[in-house]
Length: 278
Image 1 (cartoon, rainbow, N blue to C red):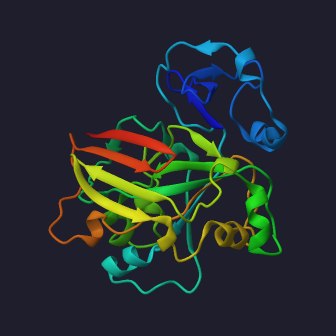
Image 2: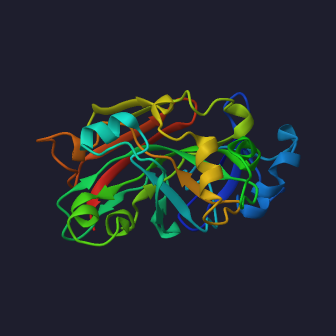
């Protein structure tokens, strides 16, 4: 299933896609695509023909409501670690983004005041559907995943790496996590380690990778993160980015107002953001 939310910011309504690409209104079944809905998702077998037809999608908003946390994984692609001159991590590098960074897949992204190094990062997002805490083994992880989505983990590298402290300064700026346009349920993605990821800046292909290049796969990450924090339905894991970011490309300009970034993962949809000054 493809599940999304559409409508004006803050007033999105839940929708679900039919096999023919048309959309149906999920409002008769749930008020929103939140943690409670995701926890009940394995038992959901909606009669799509019985749901109201959505004549036109107004705007794709973030596909999730009420996300409590976004757990991000740094340097999780071998080629990305190589391009930045960093060693392959022995364990996953974790940091958090606040839910306030989440915006719709085609919403404008605001370049923060004082930014000189706003960067792009296409990532596979894992949507948690069942509470995960102290999982015994990675083999248990998949039962806790509701689905997958496209994420752009926008970063301000000067804030992240040159201003002292942890990475959070460069990761939590307003609008820095476009998500969607929808999430695809886990049963539709039998192998999350075989997905192609691509990103374009002003029409030029910058990132062209595959989740097969992850240092730590999805199952390992869900298991590992559950040892340090409780993952709740609706939480998101941004699993890292392949090579091709501005940080790893000498003489490549960082993003400026007017730049357009397009982001795509096979089978999960496509995003398009215009970058504007805050």
